[in-house]
Length: 282
Image (tube, rainbow, N blue to C red; front, side, top):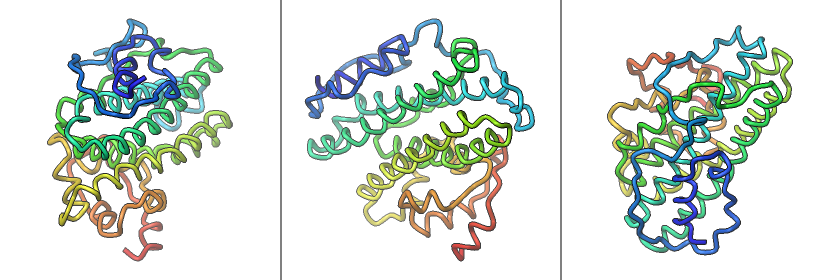
């Protein structure tokens, strides 16, 4: 199967099983043009986006099994949105780069999708263990709504890799600790597994943005390619940590700019791990 046909099958598929389509069936990584409606991914009623809002549980409430399940449903939907956005990016922007670059880039993105599919399965299985299903909760479309604001792979990697997935480095470490604190070792291990993969996902974005930025500083190039309504503060989790970002290949100038960056972003206001900063002599 061609990689674009595979991406379309996932994007248009309505069931969870469609979103988990195995990438081993891909035998052609050449770009092929496809005209499909990318305004919204295919989703059945059970996993459709909802306008109903529910709040993510506060830390203290995660000692209750029902609230841990609610948190995992949020995480599962984020993985589902990431899969759909990655597929949409391949379809929409694949023809904007050279054949050689697409061949290499698409393999990297497919590898990330494969990881996201595994993460989604881990969350869904854990939800089942807790007596719940992702369909028990209204699913928001915040991540997906940002796709209409990106116009290139530069925008995509800035938003997905260096913002959403970079923030998840922090969130994974934070909730791993929280789940362990409340005795949920299975959920904590999932967060550790996801964290390990996110490092390579951020690294993928760093690689391509460095390829394309020419004489621009990575920070400047990144900020210039973020959607107007997305702040770089979105790339920080509850407890910001430098170590994973260094492992992802982000340079010192970028990290200094990120640490120093302040905005009115308050959802929630991100805290910075000052010890990590001091250790790296910023």
